[in-house]
Picture 1 (spheres, helix red, strand yellow):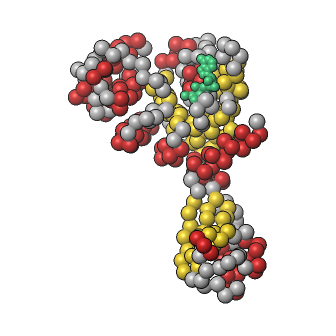
Picture 2 (picture 1 turned 120 degrees about the vertical axis):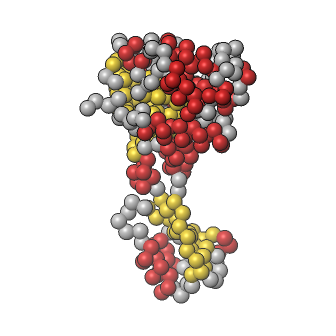
Length: 311
Ligand SMILES: Nc1ncnc2c1ncn2[C@@H]1O[C@H](COP(=O)(O)OP(=O)(O)O)[C@@H](O)[C@H]1O
Ligand SMILES: [Mg+2]
């Protein structure tokens, strides 16, 4: 079956000549959560705008549910819910009317019970009669999500949904996203919080300078690119790494009290048992061992930097 969202060599050149997307190709499968990671100006919002029909790609092809986003705009757009990066709500409208109106725009029949359910899930039901301008920033974000869900989209785009929100709302948001996935909604979120991708995504795409640097299963990405550190606390301080241990490329830290061994988690042999044996041979007494795995954050920073070096 074709992917829910198909992007083929999408390019976007803005008026003035700036090329914000330099040929992006990507398939997004039904029911998955894809996190698009990238620094400010990477092209995340541009890509989403092209998929949602807010911006027109300069070349390439984008389909949602099999519908071309330019030639079959209405059919494609009807499948999509968008939570924009910027709050764009009518300040004097009530929460209830805001959400009801959006459903109407998409030509869906009135369904108050359904809207009530959405508002309840987003903890907005008590605020349904409040005017938008009386709401906190976090509540406004919830309204944006309610709006985006009002017409039962099959694909939901969240453009930096948790930028500048408090920790509590961020956790709520993650839960809401998980619930939507359960209901079969395909979700694409952009973020520059790596922690967020790590917490909720099935797949991670990294975008920088208008190019998709990689897309991969989160778990596989972390295993493939992940390195682990083994930190070995020593009984006696060392001045230098003994020559017998040279092949392990160890670092000496904490004033000579800790040896740090860095190894590849994907390698067949980590070399740990050889290292421990070599240390015993050299007469070095261990006090403690700890391992730590580097995070998606380290991987991401490494990738984006490599990209800059290549540019
Ligand atoms: N309407 C526009 N006209 C010209 N340049 C734009 C426009 N919108 C965005 N850009 C530029 O395109 C690049 C990508 O922007 P954007 O897609 O908003 O990035 P992100 O969402 O990843 O921060 C940026 O350099 C930005 O300045
Ligand atoms: Mg953006």
